[in-house]
Structure formats: C-alpha cells, structure tokens
Image 1 (cartoon, helix red, strand yellow):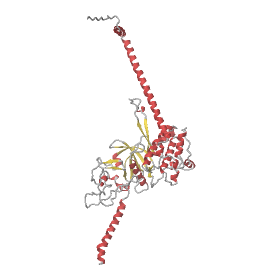
Image 2 (tube, one colour; image 1 turned 180 degrees about the vertical axis):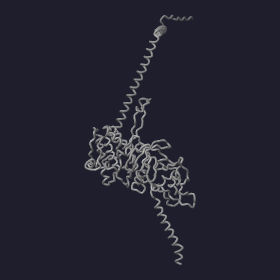
Image 3 (cartoon, one colour; image 1 turned 60 degrees about the vertical axis):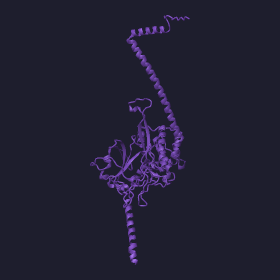
Image 4 (cartoon, one colour; image 1 turned 135 degrees about the vertical axis):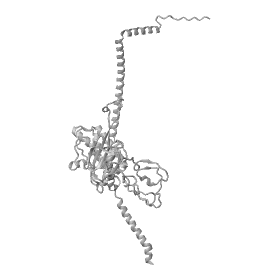
Length: 487
C-alpha cells in the first residue's frame, strides 16, 4: 500500500519538480544579454533579422499555450523597470492608451488589446536583398572615419534610405561575453532613456553585428571640443571669456537634464563634448546670397554615455583621471552629480588655454585642492571665482547643475550679450534706414539732372507753364465775377 501511494503521488510530484528545475536551468541559460544572442544576426542577412528577439512570444489567444516573456534586455535606467516575466503564467489584458515612460511617447489603442502586442517588431520598409550581409553595409554608406577612442571608432555615414548624415560608433573588438559588454549596453540604455535634448547628442538606434556593438547617433558637424582646443593650441587663439561662459552655460544645461533623470555622466571632458554649427539667417540684411555673411550658431552637446550610472545604488566606472574628482577616487559616491560639475570646470579651463592636465602627480593633487593652472589670457575675477568654486575640495560647496545655470555670472553675461546684440541690431536698422533714404534722394536728383541735360527746352517751357498756372490760381490777370440780386 505504501509503495502504491509512493508510485501514485510522490513519484509524479518528484518528476514534476525535476522537470521544473531543468526548465529553470534552461531558462537561466537563455537570459544572456542580447548582444551575446545576436551573434549570428548581423551575418545572416535581412531574412531573419529581428526574429530571434521575439520568437519566444506565443499567442495568448490559444488556450493551450503558456505565455513566456520575450528575450529583451531590462533597462536599469528607466524609472520603473518593466517586468516582462508573467507571474501568473497567463496573459493580462489592458488598455493600450498610455504613456511610454522610457520613450516619452503617447500610444493609443483600444480596450482589450493583448499586452504582448507592444513587444511585436514593427514593420520595416522592404529592401531588395543583396550579397551584403551586414545592416551597416546595407543601410549606410561610409564617408570617413571621424574619431577613435577607447571603446571604438566613429564613422561619418549617409543612410541610404533617408539621405541624412549620422555618426556610427562601432566597437573595436568583439564584446559578447567580455567585460566591456555591460559598458556598451549601459551607453545604449542611457541614450534610450534620455531621449532628445538640445545639449545631449541625439540617439537613433543600436544593434549588434558579429559580436560588435554599433550605435547610430546624431552627427555633429563641428567635431569635438577637444579638436577645437587642439586647433587653438596650434594657432594660439583661445576661447574668449564670452565664449567660455556660453560653453559653461550650455553644458550645464545638458548636465541639469541628465541629473534630473537621476543619472550622472561620470566622464565629462573635452573629447566628450561635441559641437554643432548651424546657419542663422541674417536679420539685418534680408536678401543675402553669400552664406559666409550669415552668422553661425554654435551648440555644445554632451556625448559618449558609456560611464553613465544612477545616483542611487550606482555602479561607478571611473572615467578619465585628468578630470576625475578626488572623492570618486576615494570611492565616496554620495555626491556624484558634483563630480560632473568638477569635470565641467576643468573642461572649461582647458578651453581657456590651460596646458594639458596631468593624470597624476603633485599638480594633480594641487588642482584637487582648488588651485587652477595658469591660462594665457586675462579673465574676469568673477569667472575665475566660479571655476574655483566648481572644483572645491568639498563637493557640498560646489554648485549643482541646477544652481549653475542660474548663477549670476552666467545670467548677467547672457543678458548683457542679448542687450548688446539688441542695441547693435537697432543701430544697424537705423543706419540702414538712413542709407535707404539718402539713396532714394540721390536717385531722384540724378534722374532730374539727366532729364534737364537731355531736354533743356522742354524743361524751360514746363517751368514757364507751371508759373502761369500758379498765377492763375492766385487770381492774377483774372476778371472778377459780379453777382446781382434783384428783389
């Protein structure tokens, strides 16, 4: 009897638990990063691209099917990480009219839509299959290599479909299974969460090919701030004080946006600040054919988000030691946002003409004690004091990015420059109006002189007739009329 009970109840339960354990182990093997899973996607052409990421999602309208979460990465930088693993093993229905927190887009739908539908791949424009095997080669035409760093190389490319220029960053070495894989994914996570901001390099897409990570970003036509500083060293022409204040203000605005998302950059330096130059139509002269006459607007953007981490429970990867705050080196992560402010101050000081910063040694420690290197230009004391405050040994004394953009030094400079531009604009408009008036008078006088020279008799006759007409109008040699009334 005991044996029969064992065979009827215990053995099936044991078998069920064993199968569950094996399923759990198998599932553990399947939750590797997508970069590792995408090993063969890039080299297999367009036929199966994107399928492997969604092939585990089963239709929930079948009663015999069991829902399994799709193989997608969980972004740690989202306000609330999305849990794709169904706890009950069944599909939940919900209304699809909601805000997408990670992408800040409004999505509309009807009641009763299946939740899994939001994970289905969107349709893409069909491109004729060719012998080229990588998405990079199929969708982009490489123009030139524009940069290289520790992570990889950056290429200037034209997308074949829309004809626009983008910057494609490609890792130097295979990343799948390596230590650098998490750093590469961290950059993609941060870009996706931050979205679009005028002072942060815009992110478009990312994918993996042959274990290499590729990231499609906005192309900045002015290069990096490090390139501009190197050119300034060569020509001995450095950023002026108004330009330094503008640089400081713009990058501080980008940092404020990053910090408002509870993130920190942790690698602010000239090579990670990019310049975008756009033509601004002239407001003084309406019709200008020469583009050189139009002023160019310079916008500074923060890029290279490979070291981004959260302010709560951070996983800090130390950036460039030349711009690293001392408290981070001492593993004090309580004021990480102030470490970005510290690095920004030294970045601006490099643009002012300071010699290349040391990576260690006595001068490195002197800077961390609040002593700035010498620059080859005379700057106002208020700007120097602000930079010194930003590199204060005590991070609590440094201004936050929120306070920095409202600092009196930067606000007064921006207001003063705007007022100065307004005065100059009004002066130019007034000068232009006077010139137009004088030109019109000169044209009228010239036309009259030419007419007198060509027809002198006509002008004399016209003058005489005009005099007679004037005399008649005033009553000269005119008979007076008499009116009689008879009663």
